[in-house]
Length: 562
Ligand code: DON
Image 1 (cartoon, rainbow, N blue to C red):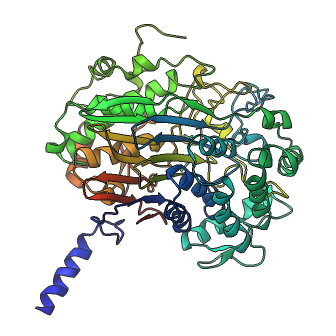
Image 2 (image 1 turned 180 degrees about the horizontal axis):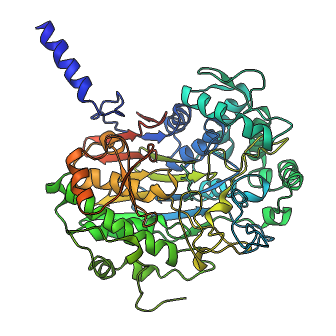
Image 3 (image 1 turned 120 degrees about the horizontal axis):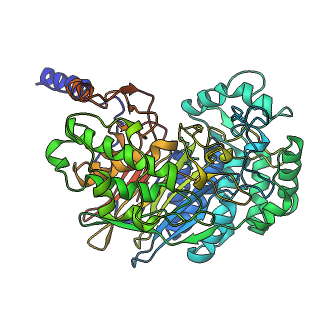
């Protein structure tokens, strides 16, 4: 008997997907749930919920906690997007995306003689930063929906910064890898830099300057960041590196409540982020494109399923490159892109026998033309209020510049603009006029925080980091639940693939496609390219049995419920 059990255990181990984590897939919580990229941040969110805070209170506390315990992407020097659904069904979205400084110019990252994009100019250092939006966003979200006092929500982050927290093995590795970069951009040092030896698992990271900045935000709210000592430090840091953000830019920054994008996939209502993120429109376009195919019958990551998803992705990313940008500067043809009949028309030249080469696919002709570091977290509270936030510095540790005297990292979000038509950004994305740089404009994003209703009730909260792969990772997580009947944990751990029009390749994670599916696709002319893990998807499902969480096994992500 014992031997049989051991054999059984070995077989289970053998077949366990590479990334599967030992989270029981079928645990349900009756009251509330928080899923974030770091265990300490999840604990903060859960404690706020248990204290009687609502989902917004917990989300605000998590955003600040992530700025401390997940400095590669959690931030106060970056921006993000929030999708909210209240327990009674009211929906809203908050755009706290960074903006180009007033002194930004269209060609600021081009070589004046050759006219070519200067590699890395929009990516590293003081000129790469947009005007940060996260603090204003949290203040506005709390003012509209928060229940607990603002000060209470800052305290956990302050404590984590002041007394420190133990870093994970993955964090030690990432910090060590960036040692030379931190030194280069922060010659006077930063708490993220261990001068003598290397960081290791379990070391305590203390961020004293950051704790003082958080105290200023606790005491003065918006003014604690955009004015006074913190703002002074920010501006003198920018000036030290010949950046262009000014005090006026800080005074003028405002996050914006925007009307959510909504659409239907079968009987599920998708509530998601409008421009300046491309994610919401693209997600609904993708879902429309595959809605009428029997995906469940074909199976997840199997021949025809992959083929139809890839062909949809190719066409949607071509639209993204041409038609999407900051709606305050460019009239995004939203209604047309979201029309089911438009998607049907886009898929007409798809051919089951052969891949459609990307050079044959251009952005759709519209009927009437009107003018890897980010992080996601999900919270659902006892009343059923739900929050889905994706927030970012853009690249790993953003611009790599830590504001001296204030201890926080600045974003490198300017690279999300199309610095030159057709010139790919960090994620290989191309763009044109719609996403060209202009003063005070928001750069186009792929972030796709999303909430899904079934029969008028909260059903799923989802989102992920991953640059250009955000949209396709959310697409897959949604289908994993809606079509392939996976639990929240299975839906996020399942291996992923990705196509983004250009380059014309299907990127696949390890084990994402079996040999037979790879052969099927190769024979039809698809180029399959293995790549490192994509995204860190977080999911909460609300089921009749309770809340179920899925925290991505590709990172240190953590779901906690009560
Ligand atoms: O807004 C965007 O689309 C990008 N700045 C997101 C960057 C990102 O997800 C990096 N994470 N891995």
